[in-house]
Image (cartoon, rainbow, N blue to C red):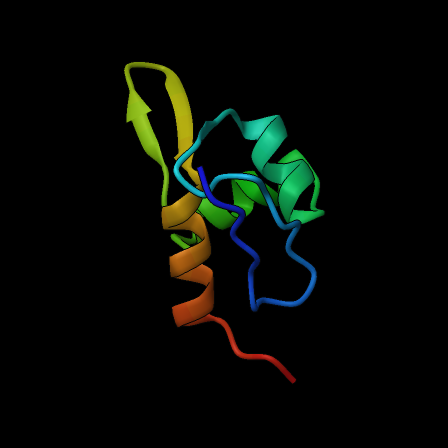
Length: 73
């Protein structure tokens, strides 16, 4: 796997962007609380996968979505 750095300020660079993450891992990488992540999910500000009651995040999708939909001041 290759190292991938992000161009989005404040996001943790990871060893791989093709990872599937749980909510606490995703919140930690975004440097937000899990409660904020829940709010972002409700507002469709971050993409997620839901299988039954399980929620997962494809890190590459999260990064791509945020880079495309968020502005940097």
